[in-house]
Amino acid sequence: MKIATFNINGIKARGPRLIEWLEETRPAVACLQEIKTQDEGFPAADFEAIGYSAIWHGQKSFNGVAILVDTRAGHTLTEVQRGLGIPGPNEGDEEQARYLEADVSGVRIACLYLPNGNPHPGPKFTYKLAWMARLRERMAQIWAEEVPAVVLGDFNVIPHDDDVWSVKAMQDDALMQPESRAAYARFLADGWTDAIRTHNPRGGVWTYWDYQAGAWQRDHGFRIDHILLSPECADRMEACGVDKEYRGREKASDHTPVWVRLKA
Image 1 (cartoon, rainbow, N blue to C red):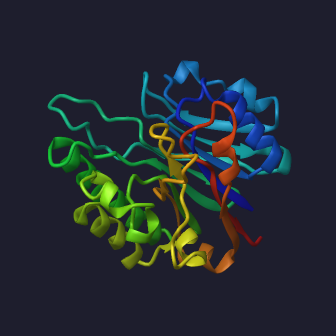
Image 2 (cartoon, one colour; image 1 turned 90 degrees about the vertical axis):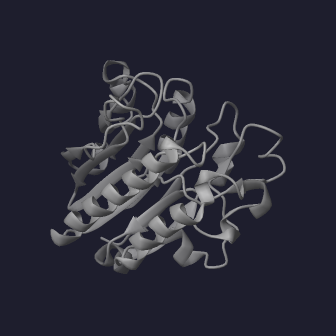
C-alpha cells in the first residue's frame, strides 16, 4: 500500500502535473496540501476520471487539504475528522482548512498542512506552536484507538541541520526555530517514526525548493514534508522515497511528492 503526500501549491494551477504524477506512480493514497480552492471549486471529476475518489477541506485562495484514494485498486475511503478546532492567529479568525483525517482500507490517514509561522516572532509563530500542540493531542487520541496510522503532510518544520542546504540561510526562519524543532521532536518521542529520516539518517534529502534565486537549479532545498508512522505501520514499512524529478517539470509545485510503501 503506497501512501504519499504532495503540497501541490494550487490544485488548479498544477492540475495537469498532479494528474500526471498520479497516473505515473499510482499511489493508493495521495494526501494533498495547499489546494487553494473553496470546496465547490475542487475538481473531483478529474480524479474520478482516472480512478480516484476524494474528500477535501477547502478554503478560498489559500490553505486547503484533500485525500485521494485509488478506487480502481479496491481501496475504500471514510472521513473521520476535519479540522482540529483551532481558530486562526488573529482575533475573530475562523479555523483554517489545514487538517483532514480518514480511514483508508484499515489505515488511519491524517493529512495536514501545518502553519508556516513567519514572521518570527509574532502571532503567526505563536499560532504555529499552538497548532502543533493540538496536533500532538489528536495524535495521542489516534494512538489510543490502537489503529494503524500515518500522519503526513507539509509540517513546515526543518527537523535537523542536515535537512537544509544552508543552516545560515534559514537560521532566522520559523521553520527551524528551536521551539518548532522541539515540538516536532515530541511527536517522535511519543513513539511515531519519521519514515524518510529512518531510511536517510544522515539527512541531505530535500522535499522543497523555492521558486526564487534559482533554488531548484542550485539544489538549495530543505525537508519539510514528512510521513510519521505508528508502530504497526513502521513495522510494515518496506520502502519510502521522494519523487524529486517532479519538481523539475514545467509549471511544477515548489514541493515534490514524498511516499511510503507498507506491506499488506
